[in-house]
Length: 239
Image (cartoon, rainbow, N blue to C red; front, side):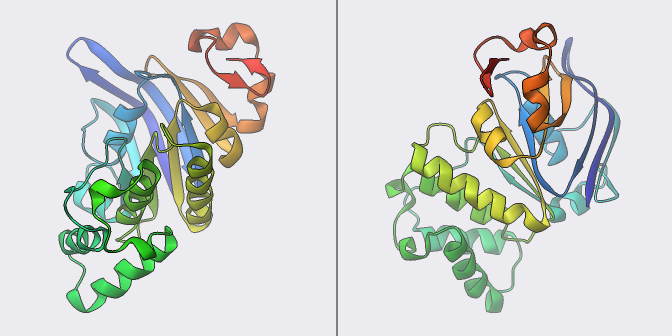
């Protein structure tokens, strides 16, 4: 399994959101790091076919990005602003999403219960969405993202606003899922990348300014990293 991105650019009018992005992403956890507005969400929305590229080439598991229907069958997406009907129960929401995913009724209940158990929400089946904590909603979001057993899972700022315990639980869940899939974790929180991802790309103003091993971030020359600003800590150094 591999995602190949070659010379990808995206324009919104006169604004360049992505500028000649080149990446190869393999199985496991891959980090996408950068400040808000760096281009992370634009890249993810292109990979999920919610946006079209301006130029360049993308294949996901050897499928060209232009074949959007085929891409959507193998990609699961958890946006930062994931939400469901607040008065639905957890089970009702998952069952409804199962209908939208065209899962046959004879299989749907078993799949829903298995997923709720996987994300530690099995005992919350009758709880209404509006009563869930932020961490519970993110875990429900992951359950819906993997309902159709995708090869690729893309998650946008999944731990923002969570307490330390929920953040750790969520990161462990993603690590477990990534054993046989590609999981792209987009965040501006360096600790999330550091603790879960072997490889990382850093975006700034739509450009990839670093692409490599997470452990090597600490060796970057400060002159090459100051464009990210001084707000992110990288293993004791400033990025």
